[in-house]
Image (cartoon, rainbow, N blue to C red; front, side, top):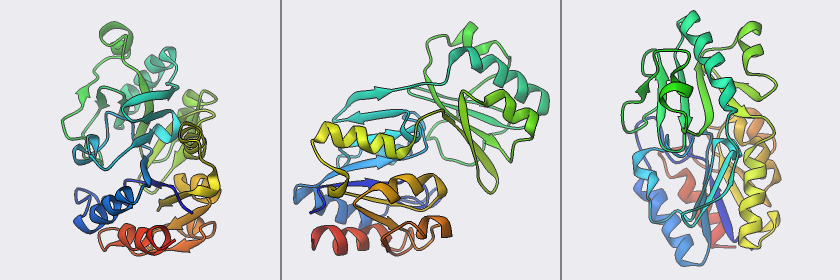
Amino acid sequence: MIQVIFLDIDGTLIDGADGPFPEDIAAIEAARDAGRAVFLSTGRSIASLPPALRDAPWVDGVIAGCGATVCFQGKMIYRKSVPPDLLPAICGLYLRNGKWCVFEGETNVFAMGRCPLFDYGEQPVLIGGADDFPRKYPHEIITKITMEGFLAPQERAVFEPAMRVCEFAVYSEAIVAGESKRKGMDRALAALGLTREEAAAIGDSENDIDIVGAAGLGIAMENACDSLKAVAKAVTGKVGEGGVAQAIEQYVLKS
C-alpha cells in the first residue's frame, strides 16, 4: 500500500503562474485524511518555492534543490550547499557574459541580470559584484543555481566538478554534486520508517527520472517528457487538468 506521495512542483502541481489547482489539492487532502504523507519534490530551493506552497497545510515535508535539502514537519533533516568559495567565480562568469543567473537559497533568492522564468513570490535580491556573497551575504546558504540557456564548455568548467549541470529547453540548473531527488526521497523515507515500495512519485521532467524510477509507484504526467514516461509505471492527466488528482484517486486512495 502506498503510504507517502512525492510531488514535483513545476509542470506537475503548477503550470507557470497557475496552480496549485483546487481539484489536485482536494485529492491531496483526501490522501492525508486517509493517513498518507505528502512531500514536495522539487529542483527549487526552499526560498524559491511558490508562495502558495511555502506553508501549505497539506504538505508534510519538502525535498528541495534536487535533494540538497530535506525538511520534515518543519525541521531540516539534511542539508548540503553550494561551496561558498565557488560563488565569486560564478558571479564573475555571469558579470562577464551578461546572461541571467539565479542563486536559490534557504532564506533568499539572488539574481544577476533580468528577472527570469519562475515566480519566486518576491523580487530576487540583485547581485552586482563578484564578491557580493563573501562581502554582503557571507551567511547565505545557496542550494541550487539556475542559469540562462545552455552552457558553453568554458562556462561548464566553472561549475564542475562541485556541481552537476542539467540542461533544459531554455535554461540550465546546477545541482550540488552527488545529490538527487531519489536520494532526498530515501532520506525522507528513513525519517518516516518506510520503504521505496510504499512510495509514489509524480513528475514531468528529466530531473524526476531518478525518483519516479525508484519509487514503488512512479507516475508521469501526460505533459511529461518521453524519457520520464519510459521509466514510469503509469501516466496520468495533464498539469492543470486534474492530473495529480487522477493519479492519487486511482493509484493511492483506491489501493
